[in-house]
Length: 111
Length: 114
Image (cartoon, rainbow over all chains, first blue to last red):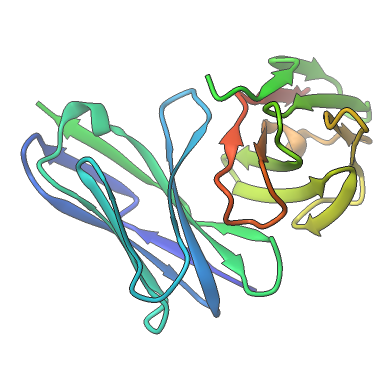
């Protein structure tokens, strides 16, 4: 069974600080996705990483993918309160459009 | 606003009943995905339809079924409901068949089974 693990599960950080969320997965996958979910809201697609070494950046968020290590990171730079949300990673099994989600990381940015 | 609509927003029903959740994709999107989010199971992919045909299946129970109609809206049917089916059900749409097309999520339907 494909497993996707995120850590930490909960993250409280001060504004202006940097931090990284990790996403490990247990089987071969070429595609890794990051989503954001605000409390009580739906999901928003953040990044789609399609190959080993892929790096994407949007504002204060940067995502990277290492398929050999089966690891993706979501790096937060100089956090601001608006980044408070739950972040999910998901992987897509090679050969099929089937998504497996991580447990989510609940991020709280403290002013 | 993602452009994806879901109805109803909330649904309360009893065990053993059957419900239908509806999703209208963004204009021009041919793929519809269904997801379930619960405290116990987390986020799970259920099923994908593309232009009326089932294209991928995830952890969808046999009591659940879905279809996509010629106008591209989709319905998720849940039958013989159990307490554990209480969850938030999201649909998402994307323009193409492949999973790496950006998905746009609807606001969700919150199902409560009593």
